[in-house]
Image (cartoon, rainbow over all chains, first blue to last red):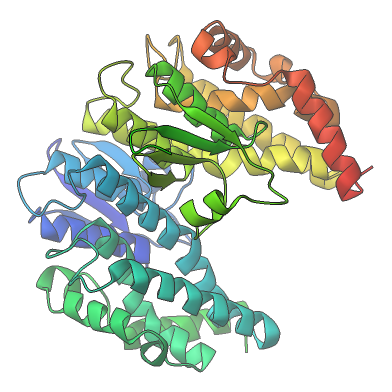
Length: 220
Length: 220
């Protein structure tokens, strides 16, 4: 690995990895993509993220950066030439970070519950999941993107979950578009950009992956 | 409330609130401190943090910023004149953010387990708590502060837990100093600064508060 290479240790269905892929694509940065087998992690992954041992890891100049929200901010700071992701105004930056954290703390866990639980637990997760999406819809308002006229930090953080939506809907037996039409319109708008659509796997492929996981975990 | 006031909605034992107090003290910013009764939250809190309804909330120019890690970064960005908290180098910023997140995700929850659980569960929490502190000691290395020669972001984020250490030790029946002497030396170094010591409650007072909580929650 050369010192000036950019390497991404990733796993294709990871919404966290997708964030980094989109951010790098927005900045037009070429990078080497290395797929990890999470049941048999590479020595490079264990060396580059010894604390959490998790993907994604972004390696630039031989030095690792971990945690996707931090990676997206880092990418924005070292390649500011193009597609600024965070706003320049400190208050707007704080608000973007707030919603980024909100997505990180709520959407993944609730989404996971949608396909790992049943009955009352699943219903509760579904209710809270929709409430969270509605809060996000409120923050989006009438803007084209969370970032305003252009894709920004919160868009990059949230849109990867769109590739998981179909799996959530099938497992949870509900329609996200019925509940949150404006959010789905936003997601489709994001998908019109190559930087997004080429960074996200098909919804069908994620659904097949979820069905596979359900079998592995013995979830009916 | 005037538009140019700085107001902090807080609760005295909160390590998250303490971070904001230290950051404001480091920047020499005067502010109005408003103590919240968390069993009877003020209308102002509910209005200013409608999503999480949690303290601390920093209100500047009438506009709220929530989540303590975001607040500390915001304070650093709007008052850059003095005591820079985050490094200027993007890689070092990413590393500081990584350890800030690590503290946020590990220390509070594990610390809470130290006084809310018993037996095997408590032993497991104690073991992981010490492991996390040792990782932090490794990151500190031989520097005076995590920020290097001066107090920085990770110092501000972590040192509030020092006021909880005595309660953890009494409830968990162990000595943090025996396990992590360098970290305790660092904490005492931080406490020599007025900006830190005046922002943190006494360890005894936190221990009394924990004993009170144990009674309220019916924990023997």
